[in-house]
Image (cartoon, rainbow over all chains, first blue to last red; front, side, top):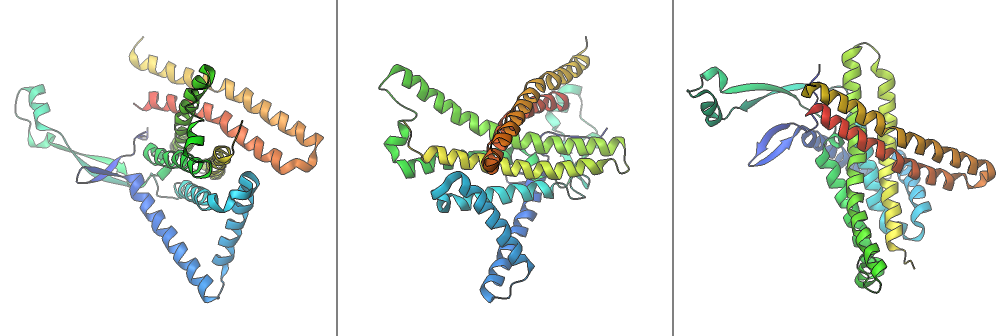
Length: 264
Length: 75
């Protein structure tokens, strides 16, 4: 039975900060993004357009048209963040499907604390029991770590509030949450605050649940039928990765357009 | 009943019952979307956007049940 852990496993510590295997893998993807941006800039400045220039133009134009149909005239303010969400999430999801992710294991020494074993056994532990080597995957899809999806969700909901204040003014925006003119409106304002918190949780668990469940599914199917049976599930996971990126960015764009529209 | 057996029953129950509501919701959303598309084929892109959005919200509930089942199983 393969070992599946909900928590992303720690590879090493920087001081007291734990570097997990999902964070480690996302740094490679970040380096890939930096290379893409540098190459696109070089091609667009020099005028020698190769395939990459046209490909990135196509993707950005499709995203621009998609988000313009939702946010209409404020597309130029919102587009960088929305397209960044989409491209970040889709590339992170798809890179978690590459061969080697989740299957290349490293041995990490897990030191067992001495005081605990002394209390349990009442005698000094022998040298063989001090450290055990645990096999953990070296790479893990970034969105299969709840910290990563929580970070994305917090950024999205925080930017909704920022854009609401920027376009409507602080007091007009706060009136949505704290409205003391009417007891009914006061309760509605409290419900609005709870709804913002539930947006964070729903963003987090939707993305995490889809991607982590996909990883578990692929692991279990590969364990049960090692030959060829994972192929349709890989296609499904490619589709799910695309849909979750689309849903995250489209929901964020809908929340943006709701926040900056003056209602009542 | 031992704790392991209770855990297995809980995992199966959580996912099984937790998928009933979202399945009905998704079927109803998709059927209304297709019906609206049949009445007004010109509004295809806005119907599609609204349908995907509605599907995402409904599917998220099933994912919450899945996350609870996974947490129960793996801890």
